[in-house]
Image (tube, rainbow, N blue to C red; front, side):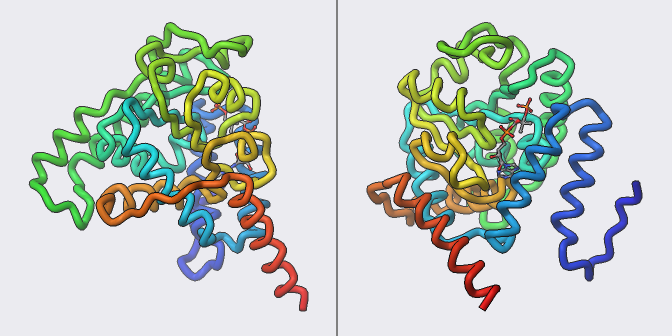
Length: 267
Ligand code: PTJ
């Protein structure tokens, strides 16, 4: 499949990301159903106008504050997330000084080690490219990035209440965390993480998925755009203002946004 898309194509970014997933799939990094999950996300993104809506901006700010105020935050990544947002999330983990755990639903040792290898390549690139508004030295940035623990290879714990390989996780990662950022999460696992007492931040383009409805903060945005925004907010952390977050109200706001947009398109 040719992956040449002219810059003038109105959906270039979206198509480029499909090819990114296609290449990752050929390398065996993704679940067999990864494209179906992505397609469902794309359908919702189309309804959102392929942009970050205001309530998602606000949710991302509150997520940044929650992660920054946590005692043991963690970023959990699956196959799609690694490919679509690996570099940005490594940078976020560096800014939070927290581990990143490869924790996949369709678990195989080959996929876990392949995804960790991919994140190591991301790490090298990110360590050599500090953010444009990074105020400290490039060496400090490099050290922060190199200190990020990438977990998942020796996962020896189980998320209570889940059966099968999808429960496997790291005792010093997810099992020890108090706040978890877990993009594209499955409803059952989201519920199990909530039952463990964690604060759960999900990123899901579907505002009515079980994960969105159950989570502490749901960010109705594309994972690539979200990760960029999270990084920006973590870099400007001092200026962020905490507010009481009502997740269901925020989800209603996202649905209203879709509704209004559709009405305007039709009128
Ligand atoms: O790598 P693995 O083995 O952990 O498997 C990953 C997938 C994504 C295949 C697996 O977790 C899965 O099947 O996911 P679901 O249950 O289909 O849920 C995916 C959710 O993510 C759906 O609600 C989609 O709307 C949403 N989604 C898909 N792509 C994006 C997204 N949300 C944000 N950004 C996206 N790019």
